[in-house]
Amino acid sequence: MAKEVKTNEYKESLLRISRVSKTVKGGRRISFSVLAAVGDGQGKVGIGLGKANGVPDAIKKAIASAKKNMIKVSLKGGTIPHDQIGKFNSTSVLLKPATQGTGVIAGSATRELLELVGVTDVLTKIRGARNKDNIARATLNGLSKLRSLEEVARLRGKTIDEIIR
Image (spheres, rainbow, N blue to C red):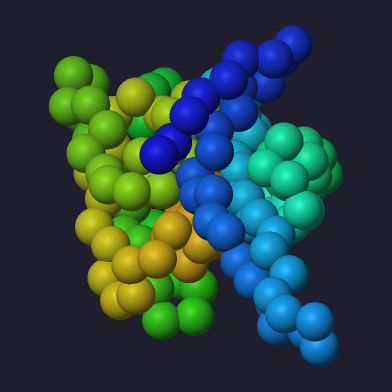
């Protein structure tokens, strides 16, 4: 169901569109819930949730929310700098760097997010609940915890050589 749309500088992907209903005094009120992801392919990605009475309005809200909640991700070439486990509720996503040419070995919302952020080679494993919302948030959590060697050196006030040794 993932549909990719290209706008100005961001690529957008719809991870989930679902019809939801609320029971009120006069019957049921139907509305739509959309989970969308936005990325620039160069290290920035975000997810957002939008709800509205019509699908187009819900999509607009989800994309606007995703743009507001974007994070910067540290990349190392076409892969990630180190192993990382992202967690959200009962879902955990293991992200492992891979050699060039491996491709994105991932499923569900994890693949969409990794492609939007600009990762071309990575291995992943999803554990726990497998609904798209939790997977997307767990993946985003794992990506947000990634640090490059330069960042770690700067944070510790050391040189890269001191950290490698």
